[in-house]
Image 1 (cartoon, helix red, strand yellow):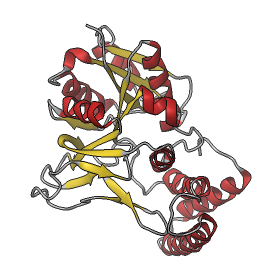
Image 2 (image 1 turned 180 degrees about the horizontal axis):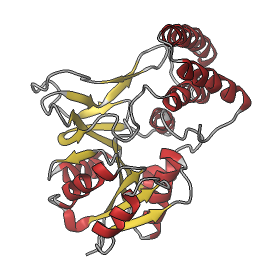
Image 3 (image 1 turned 60 degrees about the vertical axis):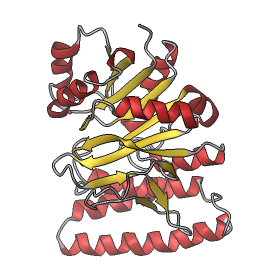
Amino acid sequence: MKKEISVILINYNGKKYNDACISSILGSTIAKRIQIVVVDNASTDDSLSALRGRWGGHEQIHLIELNDNYGFSKANNEGIRWSMEQGIDYYLLLNNDTEIEPDTIEQMMRCGQKTKNIVVPKVLYADRKNVIWCAGGTFTPVLWKTIQSGLDQTDSGQFDVSGECLFANGCALLLSREIVERTGFLDERFFLYYEDVEYSMRAAQNSIGIYYCAEAVVYHKVNGSTGGNERPANAYYITRNWLLCNSLCMWHGEAISGKLRFLLFIAYFACNRLAWLLIWFIQGKRGMCTALLQGVRDFNRKKWGQY
């Protein structure tokens, strides 16, 4: 049977997550229509050998082995390009620290084919399956700061209605060939963090909407794939890429000019980063302080890629 959708998983030292994620995908109601593409970012644990041993002979699983850790954007782009070459027209970018309901992919495909938009699911915490992590998303009106709808709210049906939203979280998002051809691939300068924010804004600039599919449910082991935010590398990426994203999207929005909006962002950014510098300095986390300052420096130097 011809595959209609690729589920693209990025692996970097994710041995403890991969099997559960892949098994949940293969348990989908439309499993026979699915191609799984695992892109390994030069893992340094034995997750790659574990993937080969468990799934290497599976006809629905294709493993792409990169020779270095190129980050989230490039790895996903490699998976999308390979899928396009196989004649596959839909691409679900899915964190490998997730598990899905059997009908999740079917529901997202239904929404994607109907709306022609980017599609995002309802994402719940894996260890608290009655608590929402992300039910679509939006932006604040002036600074265009991302807001994950429903974050940390008990799921009592308040986000059970599907509809348009503004932000597609990279944890789980469905693209079509048409969307990629119109909007382009993920921006590989980001490496990690904010690539989904920039892509959401770029899609809007190309008249492509984002649709929240409430019927599709994903369970996320939050920060499993990135190791959490209390790492110098993450402080670096958040600082540098926050600046990069806003510099690229400064003209987004109608209520206020792009230049003024960017100046307001810079003021907010400076206060936020100075506050964290002070907190980390008091806590004795000098590595976090150094990484933050390096993030600002590398943005000014236009130095992208890995920390």
